[in-house]
Image (cartoon, rainbow, N blue to C red):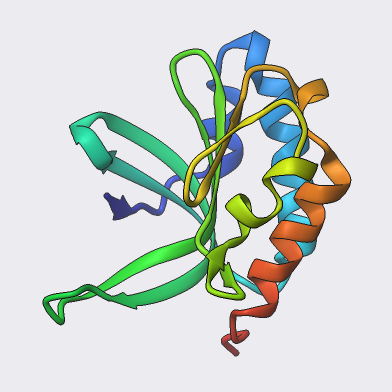
Length: 143
């Protein structure tokens, strides 16, 4: 995936009606917590090769096992085919925070660094805000 310079508001406005309000609401929540950090639309092939568009918050530099350095985001928000995913690339006590707080996130599907759901009512917003705050606190604000 690659960073783009595309307008995120235009991207959100282009989403299907049934998901647009939820994505806009989550974007506001995440943006408010991640204030001072980047907010960038990433596009291109994602894991598994599917084409994706992900709103990324916060710049993250990771070194892969073979020493390659990659640029990524700390928190991501994306509409998939039939559900919404939030990616949180933060670790606390040796565990991805999405996994660590799984039991408090609501009726959602949780992977290592992903939280997926169909309906906003299934997601515990207070816990999401906590998880995103933990991720934010692991970043350094770039001036």
